[in-house]
Amino acid sequence: MKKKILTLVCLVLIGGLSIFSISACDKDTNCYVRVTVVDEVTHAPIKGVFVKIDIDSSYINAQGYTDASGNFDATFTAPAIFNVAAKYETGYDSVYTRELFFCYRKGNNTIRLKEGDTVFSTVNLETEIYRDYRN
View 1 (cartoon, rainbow, N blue to C red):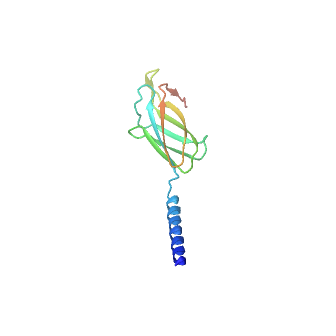
View 2 (view 1 turned 90 degrees about the vertical axis):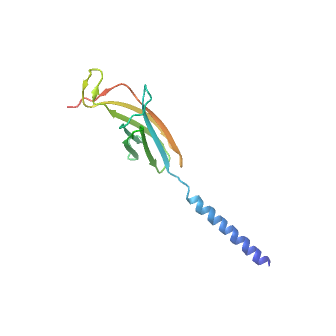
View 3 (view 1 turned 45 degrees about the horizontal axis):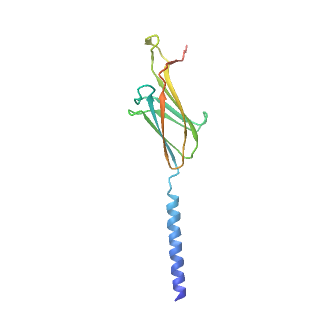
């Protein structure tokens, strides 16, 4: 009788540990980030801004354009501290009030991603127009 009870207790413990270990493997370890790009003055979201998230220009990066809500989403497999750079080509020089190619507005931020969490970051796009004079 004691042998049957001991066997039953062992089976229950082994089954419980198996279920626990299986559920522990299902833990989401990805790191998620949502970058929202807004105007520095009006705080309105801006569509079509190029966003690059990287670690000091390394090969580990995500890049793309913001959607209609000014959001860009990315997923990374490991936590780290990332630089966020946003660049919006205006094609218009407000100082000289004329069309001029290679004019842009920019904004930067730094984020720390955490395993299994979503980090929300807002980048303010500066109102100043930068000019890249190309030949």
